[in-house]
Length: 87
Length: 481
Image 1 (cartoon, rainbow over the protein chains, first blue to last red):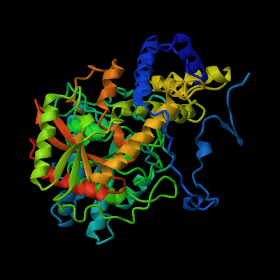
Image 2 (cartoon, rainbow over the protein chains, first blue to last red):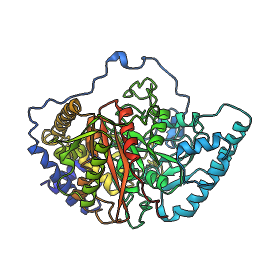
Image 3 (cartoon, each protein chain N blue to C red):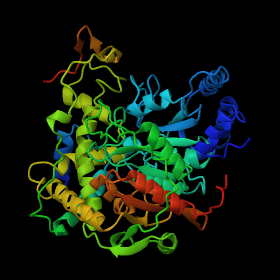
Image 4 (cartoon, rainbow over the protein chains, first blue to last red):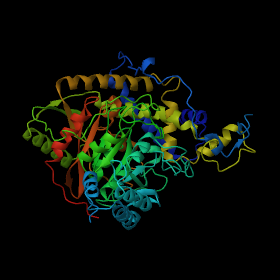
């Protein structure tokens, strides 16, 4: 069971304003389903990670990207991207 | 001239001069005009498709160098970037997003003279399995328009099934190519992780998703794989497949091959008609000289929970970029505080995406990661080990692609637990990085059933050979559109 407060807290961190009241119930149901992981008996299991040796990575060399991506932004002014105030 | 032909047949006909690309593409566009009002596979159309086909015909006539597609009309899932065209991910957030570059798969298909007839529908940001979560409305199953076509690459499957293109590209994070392929009776291929570049595929859950073709035949899937697979310096997860020719020797047969029947994928909740189709497929494979034996992979039971935990976590991070500063831009930053501005922008995300972002914030967070995210990663590790062990004994694994038949639009939309169970047979291939295919197998009460085969990593060629052998045992009715 995940409380309304917990969901609201996470939503705030994710910068999501909840205006759909059904969200609490559905998110709670989804997380409730994940409880099945408790019975998987995998506590002692190692987490395998995909390793790519540095030698397999592409050369660490600057390759220009010829598309002027940043100029496609509407809030682009000079060499800056405009963002809302952070206070 | 019929548009109801496979990709390889199309190429043969154009090559031999019996068919012009222009006529075929024009007929295909007519078919879209005729049926798409009812099916809603497409989100946008390429108005220049017929002109582009005419140019290809000219090139053929003048003896110029022609790519292997010969102007073949292809549809593209709307989460794959085609330069200078809209790529919406079926989201209001990207309603006006014009892709600034081509995905690697698009570059490769352009080089081969493919024609993109349009971009096709999906669940918003590929999160779903019915296209009901598209912000632009669901696609309909051509076999019965009251039913879902599956998803998330529903538009891809519908467009192939209803002859609105010859082939399509979708993406498969937990079954999103195979599920709609099964529901619409097309072939759907999810390659070994890393076989196809994801550069230009809008990210959802990078660690497990792959682009894959949806086609009318297994041979066509092999042909498409030949064109779009291979290492790409823009995607460090790609692997070198040494230019493997997946079409060559596709008719090698499966005599002497050992096939494991995954017990956990034939259990609780399976539709009786799906179960009997699977038993029938097994006996057909045995008739072709394979030996089939049951195998238990007990981690499958936990795979869907692990899958949703991992994908939500990656989605929570990937979708953080949608803040209206770089995408959206429909209201000014003036007069807003930072957080409230982004909160307002994110209201354009649909309900399922919003829920999964919240899940994606919750399951890896301090205090919860141990119970959810880390445990999910451990299930993924153990499942991978179990599947690898299975491949020491077996060449292939089999299950139905989806345990149930296509369901009615609206029937399960508010029932996440019911939707979760639909993914049970497909997520294992994603979590373990293995290649898997859905092959149209039978029709029950007018609704399609697909059969899934899974092979070990980089055994894509063997998988396609087996799928081809199984496909040859099947004769299905034509789609009733």
